[in-house]
Image (cartoon, rainbow, N blue to C red; front, side, top):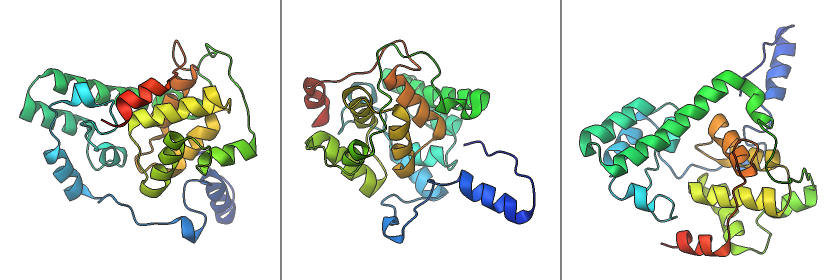
Length: 236
């Protein structure tokens, strides 16, 4: 989010700021819950030290694969991308797994640069879609999805985990986004806002542009999945 420059009296500026930040925080006390993840610099450094890159390249797409779980700390500035990359290089050298991990860090940095260039333009289609997209805003259908009432265990479980923990695996994020955009034909912006509201590691650039990548408004093709893809990567 890039905040506009507010003018007027102190009260008018306060109202403008409050309006701009709607949806960023819990609006009801019952929505607030203690994070299951420890925050702070000490916890971030401990998590970085515990991460072992071996097997990352071959298993990172599996829900139980070897992923770093460092995105929370990078997102909130507790750990720097260069710092994380250097730590992996010093401990594991230039292995294939390390290189693949650096590439993923590179994507995150790339999104950040685009955010700096485009600002709130990341929330608008960057390209024409490569497949027909719906622009559905069906509130009943959206509620069914985000409340975990689709009847599809894989999607409903994704919602439950996201809301309860603030985190889901990146591959699960892609499946869910594809389900919302391509199967249910809802506009990608509704799903993007839902993710950003709940993800502890929710990064404006990575989140919005990843949804666009799935939708094909920032990629050369749409991202689709099937049952076999979930079965292959979901349980191992």
